[in-house]
Length: 121
Length: 110
Image (cartoon, rainbow over all chains, first blue to last red; front, side, top):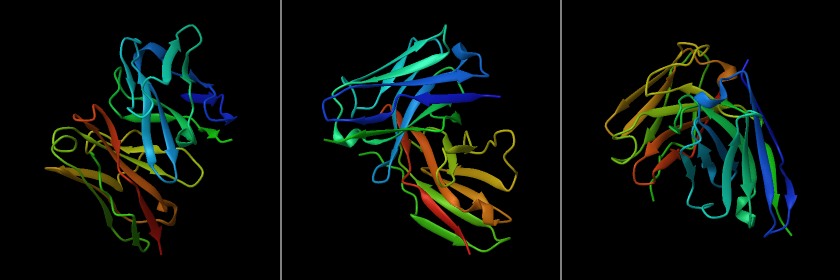
């Protein structure tokens, strides 16, 4: 059974940092891209970042470029999203989502339960 | 700004066939495939249709997808009360070089 388990969300003040983790099980980790999709009531769903199965290709939304960094640890089957210089508009539920393919295509066939990130003073 | 446009809401009665539309442009739906997701309240989205018309294992054949030009549609036949959910279309956008999601359609089963 494929499972994606996110952790690391919480309440932080503007300008602070958080690191989200997505631990995957039940898949051959290197065969699939893993992404982070966030959801807010106002802006809906947004692909924030992604990393290909081989780790040789990454994606960042323009809204987070230069502030967020995605990485993966193959020994732990885990993808990380380091979020720096957080802003109020980064407040959202962050989902980890597995792509159906090796590259980032937007075909997300498994999702984690989501972790809430709140940026507020 | 590239966008995928969906109606904010649709409704139907049990047993009915309903369709949800998704309108895009030449940089997204016009040249790339469309995926559909369903999200029940308080849960993560679930892949319903991929590559315009394909159903992942376990998705009933009551759900079908189609695409024509720069628009796509999701059809649900034999509507059931448990189909009440938010439905999102998504497609890669070549201008954005990323995935675009539609704004979502809330389906109500009367």
